[in-house]
Image 1 (cartoon, each protein chain N blue to C red):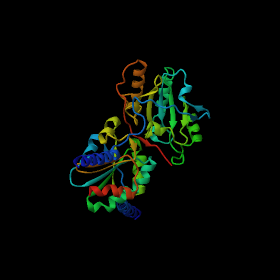
Image 2: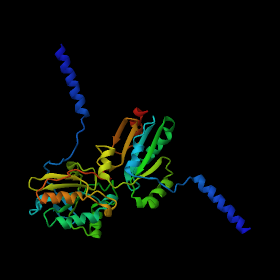
Image 3: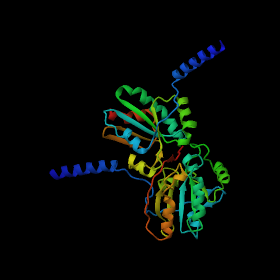
Length: 201
Length: 161
């Protein structure tokens, strides 16, 4: 009788914990990512497997409208110019549903990319199937992936001063890619910054 | 005579501006200064909302927070709206927005670049996306990285009262 009671209690505990443990969705540092195929602003389809020469990728969820994305545009271009030739190109993805975020439509992405002279692909997460796999919650949101095992190496912010580029004292993404290129261990694998929530219709 | 007229008009306009209660200033806080607002222990319930004028879902949910501030004022509830507008937008956007929407809740600006530090410090689960909200009363505290409507917010608030 006593053992039945114990089993029942354990069972009840199991049920309670199953509902209270918060499942953190999306990739964590170390996870292997799945490739994707998304439409670029030049109307071609882009996958990570297209990049035969790359050593890895700086994947940045970003968009046209978010002021935190806009304030980083020049710094994202600079990252691509610096690291594409070293094997870590920037891949930008707009995760927003344009019906919920005016100005973030595919045609508007083309306009913004040409105005700013984006040097990297700017992909549209049409149907919003890719960003949830990553677990991206905001723009900008960076995932650095090394190509050898397609592992996530870093998740977070671009640097430690979004609003004031002149006040940056730590360049998280540059530090991470430099370490990967040098075969060193990353000092910081996760950082945070304020951003705009991803817009769902 | 004309001079007298102008002086009278001047005072009338002064009175008028007092009645409208237009604000001209928003207090700016570093995280360390803001912390005192996030850790009060005075028996009151605080609803702290992180928002910005450029954040569409934030603007959409503001009326719910304003309504809580009004309806629950007598129940010891205080709403504080922590703006994450860029400091250079305060005069141009934030202050006109507060006046246009006639916001009654206290609005403060969080101006602290060390985001990686204070986002974690505010809540370990916060990714940094806004809107985000804290409801707390002394040591009881809950954090929400989500949008609210009035009913949801009221439901979350009830257990703190």
